[in-house]
Length: 205
Image 1 (cartoon, one colour):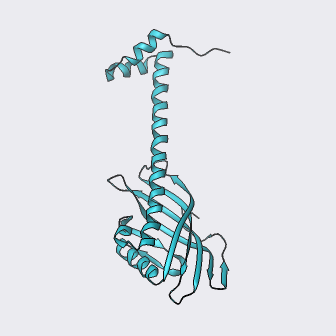
Image 2: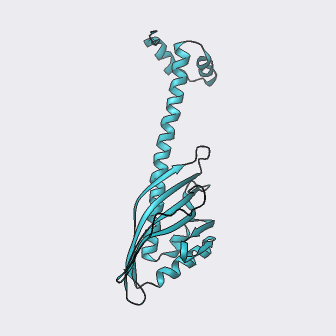
Image 3: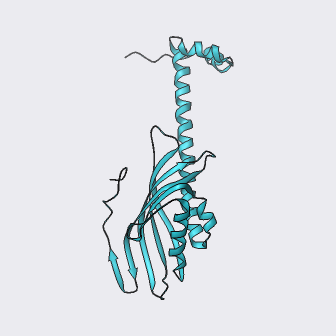
């Protein structure tokens, strides 16, 4: 089996010393180990940069989820508004749908204010990025809510959000679409358990 070519120390020194883009381009096109090594290094750097960017994006989207439950728990509806795109869409299942950030904030605020007390917690989730679009992603996250309803009944809810995220021109991730489906609900002594949703549109269907 043919052994891979190895660059000499002098050749590596020459590669590192290149600052002229046109000269670097000529070397990348050059046949043999020198050109191959330079091109491999550039591809490797691009791959590493993409991994770093995706890791940062996952952290930012996780912070978006954390900010959502934080604003809901504190009834900070101005802060909640900042988490959505202007034309965002929210599907709350049996609780209805709303489009546009004004309608979303009003709907969520009305539901939260109807409770005597509410604590929402976000659990684990997954994020997927579009292969051909660096400004969009999808995610699936599980949440729990517990509190006291308006009539004094203790309640506990758990469910799953299917999200679509959009990176705005400033680089911040925001909710473009949120679809909630309840999996477990307990109101007083009444308990309801639902199967994982199968009625969702693409990309979740």
